[in-house]
Length: 162
Image (cartoon, rainbow, N blue to C red; front, side):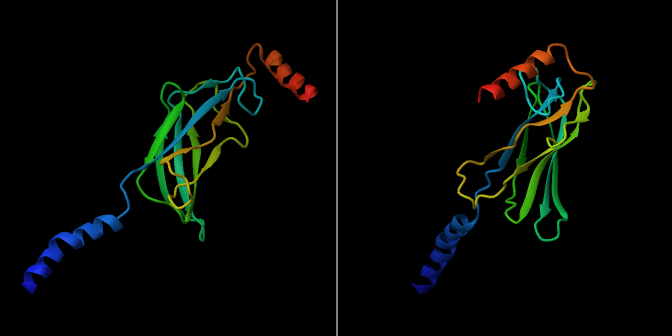
């Protein structure tokens, strides 16, 4: 009788405990957009377009050694949006989405300060969703597009009102 109880314990209870302890296999999805700053304003404006086929990379570094411990590449779709799936938790790492290259022939210069975006990839921070949204990253066009003076004037008028 005792041997049956031990066998029952081994076959039923222990596997259930292992499943309960093991973390869920829901991947994180890192999402963001890549834009072309046609006015060379340094931020998104109403003249901004989004770049299809831009290459981005998710890079995680150790908090203690600053050594790169994880990388994964992705590309933007027709709306300039990318999604990179990550299976592991990176609680002890600093992760950033980074620009790699632009597919837009006239928009290849990285916008200063908009070349990477911090992404938190851990489930131990109170965020219930597995979706992580990175700030938009951008490239600038070589030449200022037509109509940009008016676009930027609107921002200046808004500043003067406040």
